Amino acid sequence: MAEIKLIDIKEDILSDNQALAGQIRDDLRGKRVFLMNLMASPGGGKTSLILQTLKRLRERFRMAVIEGDIDSQVDAEKIIREDIPAVQIRTGGFCHLDATMIERALKELDMAALDAIIVENIGNLVCPAEFDIGSTRSVMILSVPEGDDKPLKYPLMFSVCDVLVVNKTDYLEGSDFDMEALKERVLRLNPGIRIFPVSCRTGQGIDDWAEWLSAEIEKIKNWKSSF
Amino acid sequence: MAEIKLIDIKEDILSDNQALAGQIRDDLRGKRVFLMNLMASPGGGKTSLILQTLKRLRERFRMAVIEGDIDSQVDAEKIIREDIPAVQIRTGGFCHLDATMIERALKELDMAALDAIIVENIGNLVCPAEFDIGSTRSVMILSVPEGDDKPLKYPLMFSVCDVLVVNKTDYLEGSDFDMEALKERVLRLNPGIRIFPVSCRTGQGIDDWAEWLSAEIEKIKNWKSSF
Image (cartoon, rainbow over all chains, first blue to last red; front, side, top):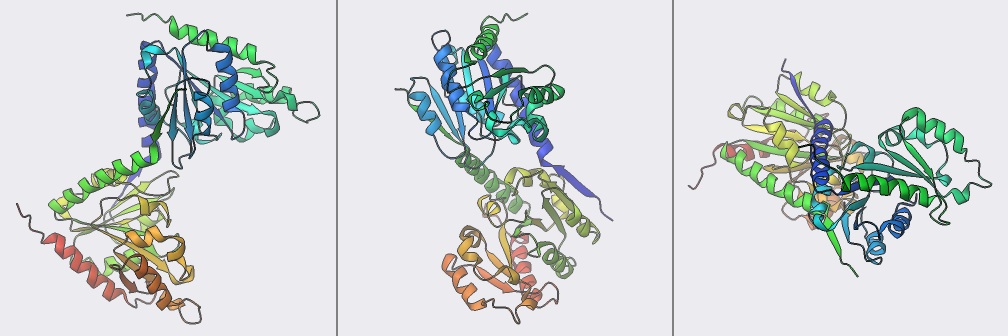
């Protein structure tokens, strides 16, 4: 009997993606540009956090935004209204961004004129966690209305991120969201993760978050090659 | 105000795919190998039609099968039990095959030892219709239990195929499936399409189908380059 030749597409795609993401990361570091991958569920507050962050950091750093969307550009419109350069990636159905898409988007930006780029990934806690886009740092938002049990349901996302922003803390009062239980669940998956509770609506906690991000951007800006 | 730079991933992917599919088609014709793309809903009878077809044609042509599946290889196992070479593409979640996957799979087969390859695409009437895989001919199956209204719901699939096999005609009796209404709907979308009513279970109509396919394979086998 003949033998079945097996081709595993997903494994191939993930390993090709990982290789390209590594190249992008090295290349950006060489150019002293910081890249942040921002992930969350739909409605978690990605665009709001970006707008709050730009407000704090735009005088200090030269910034741009890459917006991922399945089929619209409303978020990119909010960014350019702030007079910040924006690239819109319209995936046409794909539920995540990948390194190839980011490589294409970066070509639309002038690296020599930038210190930091924020990528707003597609609203989804599953697939974006599997695809490294070459970011210097990965950040996710969980919003209070989504509930404190999400680390149990989407462990990979909580495991791959450097930072968890817990947004919409203005909803905490009167909710059964247990911040301590959340932190315990997250730290069990990812002991090195930083957690910032914020409210993009009231501005509470945003300064701490922006301070951390500034320090990370500075590290890349002042990065000295050992060669 | 800044301008949004727009990157349209789906359009890019479809046009890259189309270019590679064209290369595959030319390359196979140069090697005198026929490639058939077989598409249908899950349970429409793709594997049954392949097995019936192999039974009729295996003495006349040297054949192989490329099996697409999201996450199993049960169909490929049925093929190698017939002692026919099989390549299994496991997409790991993707709902269609594309030209890149077929290019990879073709490398696992000995072209010099083959006349015809049948590709069993992922069970889905939507996405596979958008992705040319470089096939010489595209064939779809609609099975009687699915209903005669499917051309209204999945017009692209009925438009891109060279042949419609209407399978499970043994269910026609006592059903409200209207073969004439189906034909009218299909021919309105695609006046050049060939329609073969068959029953893979009883074998009814399979000879007509196999005769058409044999003639198509012969065309490629005897193809003379004009150069």
